[in-house]
Image 1: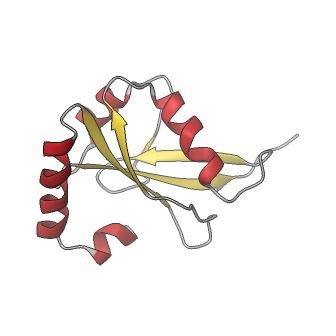
Image 2: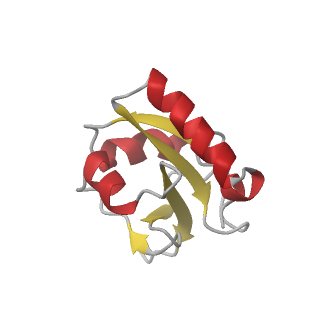
Length: 118
């Protein structure tokens, strides 16, 4: 379970979703957190993203907020159990949300630092 889910009950998350949904009907609600406490932290975890934005653009906006050097690799995951599916940057946020959002209305994206060779 992610920190956002631990700190907020299902009812609180659902109320937040419904409140923001009224203000921003053409956007999706995304929570981005590190997959483990050992992964680098992020300065902002809640995002309201236009429904037609490609995932590659979403990640390009999120990556600079993660406290990691630019030459390090990150892997992004989605899914009901978090870390379940590697996020394809070719997807649209609309498609990813449709496939992987939780019952509380949020799409949870986790990230982890990946080892690379070269």
